Image 1 (tube, rainbow, N blue to C red):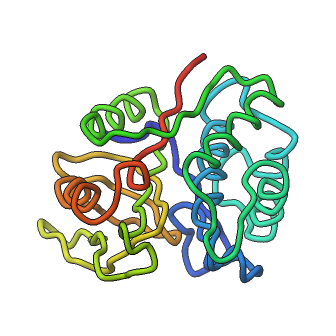
Image 2: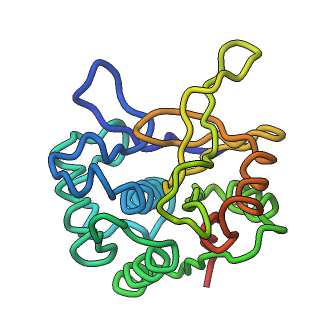
Length: 224
């Protein structure tokens, strides 16, 4: 199960990225705390390119297909952060505020969609499947450790596909990624402008044992 249209990418490098990347921003606060707004920006661009009625003045500079130029993308992202998804250093933002910002954007532009930050983990897979089936990317939060929220002891692994094998490439917490596909027990995600995979069982175990399902969950977007 995967998105039906071309996913967002940025040009200007040796090859296009897979989604936006906060690490390419010229602003240090975005590099450090901008993963949530990047996830929102990528969904809004995807909506604009794949659904009627989702073209807005904020996104008018983004091309209708193909990679976006980095200065254009980050100018749009900065305006998105100022109006809808403010970033606070060093904590960034939380899922509830991201959903509120997205809903403010939908209302302002008369888009009949509504974003909801989910709380429980039992329906996680069903919610991801539902959104992918209607051709919507899914913002997925890998929350902080709890109750020791400054701890980095426990993390969720990000994998890359090598033939028939999955190889662990990184481990993260307190981070947002965007789900673009689901293959059995694996979620294909965009993070830092690259394609990775997350094992759903490992993610759910982390949410229950080392974080909270409030922090480690998904944003559901649906028709009003």
